[in-house]
Structure formats: structure tokens, C-alpha cells
Image 1 (cartoon, one colour):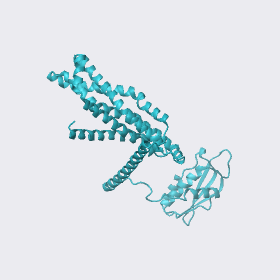
Image 2: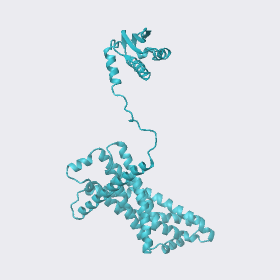
Image 3: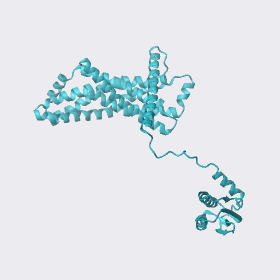
Image 4: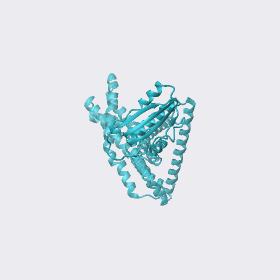
Amino acid sequence: MTDVGEPHGTGELRLNKTPDGELRVTLAGKWYMTDTPPSPDMVRNEIETFPEIARVSFDARDLTGWDSSLLTFLLAVIDFCSQRAVPVDREGLPVGVNRLLTLATAVPERKGTRRSAGHEPFLARVGEYAIVFWRSTREMLAFIGETFTALLRLVTGKSRFRGSDLLLVIQECSADALPIVSLISLLVGLILAFVGAIQLKLFGAQIFVADLVGIGTVRAMGAIMTGIIMAGRTGASFAARIGTMQVNEEIDALQTTGISPIDFLVLPRLLALSVMMPLLTLYADAMGIVGGMIVGVAGLGLNLREYYDETIKAVSLTNLWIGLFSGFVYGILIALAGCMRGMQCGRSASAVGDATTSAVVTGIVSIVVATAVITVICNILGI
């Protein structure tokens, strides 16, 4: 740059046409952005007005100062000339300007680098989805296999994790989850009783609201709602914590020191959630029955003792064990989904969010599929 002082004065632009078809662009004065330098439209209009112009050259001998506004002007002129196939001679420009122009135009955009706006063919999308599904299935099976191997090491006393971590996760999966489990289970019991009462009142059979709420809650709804709550609460927490450790390279540090991340991180969470989910399911069953009792006693005029006796008569131990077994299965699925997505997390902050979302979705879908399988098996067994 010729002048690095404070900008003063304005840039000057003169255009001269020679008889041999050359347009000489003379640059003079100080070209600073703060002084509103001349527009490249003057050169464009001159070339469009006189088609006989076959060449453009520059004369910058009277140029005393410039900044990026001059480069912007020159790039616009050069780009327009290239579109009109008019050669440009840059020998009259300062060495620094030429160097910057060379850098600015050295790497043109390659054709085909931009993503086309068109849609991919249907078969291509199906194939891509199939490949992603196959890779996800392989990763899931590999993770389940590693977890099963870790459980075998636990049985033989060879696994390594801290007992304090196990107790901390148990507290998180039990006492800390009681408020939200209580609220949701109570509301589900209220809803079941209210919906059933609307229909049963038509036949004068309000007492059977106790059967509906008791069997529905104990056999299925208590475990399902508890599983969904824990998937959104605890499963997401597992994925976020392990994913953050993946971002901070703490899992790499564990592997470097010879500690298996599956033993140290996954096993405590799997054991804690699989043990506490049946207990939470039992608690959710009780809260759901209480919610149904509130509707039956306050809304239908049933006697408290009458509602209690009907519930005891309707709910069998078979229904109770099916619900507890479902809760145990849901606990395993939620822990596996949360830990697996956390272990598969990428190395960025956004990847942690994606892993958390994926853990919740995977956990809920697993619960729905497991419910369907358990229902079919119970139907086949006649229980």
C-alpha cells in the first residue's frame, strides 16, 4: 500500500479509448472505502456502449493511496470483462494490488462442487437408508455383545467399576425420580378412571372402574409410563454424560489406562436401572390405583372400602408379575439405549445433543416393541 496514513481526498477514475480498441482505465488519488470511491458501473457502461472495445488496461501511476475498496472495484471490472470475453492487462497496477488480485482469483470454484437442488432418485435414497440401517444394526449388536461379555466378567468377579458410582446411579434412578413418577402415574390413573367411567355409567356399572384401572395399570400402563419417564429422564442423562466424556476424551483416557469403558461406565448404569425399574413400576402401580380411586370415590360416589375390595378381587398376582417383568425389561433397554448412544457420540457439542435425542427415541421405540412382544408371548401362554 502506498499510503497508510489517515484517508483524505477521493479517488479519481478516467476512461480513455484508443483508436486500436483499447480502454485505458486511469486510477488516481486516494481510493478509500470511507470516501465512497468511483463505481465499477462506469467501466461496465463504457464497454456495453462501445462493443468495439477489445482490451482493457490500467494506469495507476497517479494512485497515491488505496485499501480494499480498490480491490473490490478491480475484481468487479475483471469479472465483468471475463464474462464479455474482453482481455484485461493488469501490468499498470501496483505490485501489491496485483499480488492480492492473484490470490483472490487463484482458486476458482470447481464445477459440480455445489450440491445440486435436484432430489436424489428414489432407489438411491432407499439404498442409502438401507446402508445406514445395516451399519446401525451392526453397531448395536456389537455393543450388546460387549455388554454381555462385561456381565460375564461381573459374574466371575473380573469387572472393574466403583461401588460409589453404582450407589450414585441407584439414587438417581430411584429416589430422585419419585416426584415425576408420582405425578404422571397419578394422572394416568385419573385419566383411565375418568374415560372408563364415562362409558360404564351408561350401564350403571361404575364399580368396574376399579377393575379397569387396577388391571390396566398393574399389567401394562404402570410399567409403560414409568419406562417412558425414565427414557426421557435417565436414559437421556446417561447419553449426555457419556457423550460429554467422549467429547472430552475421558473415554480414550480410560482405554489408555487399561480400563474397559463398558465395565466402568455401562455396567453400573445397567445394573442400577434394571434393579430399580421393577420397584418404580410397583410404586407407579400404587399411584395409578390411587388416582383411579380419587375419581371413583369423588366423581362416581363409590365407597372407599368397596373400591378397594373390587381392586383386590380384580388384580391377580399374574398381572402384577407381568408388570414387574415388563419394568425389568424396560430398565435394561433404556440403560442400553442411553449408554450406547453416549458411546457412539461424536466429538462436538452438537453431537452430544444428537446422542441425547437419539437415546430418548431409541428407548421409547424399544419400550413399545418390547410391550408388543411381551403381550404376544402372554397371549400365547394364556396368561
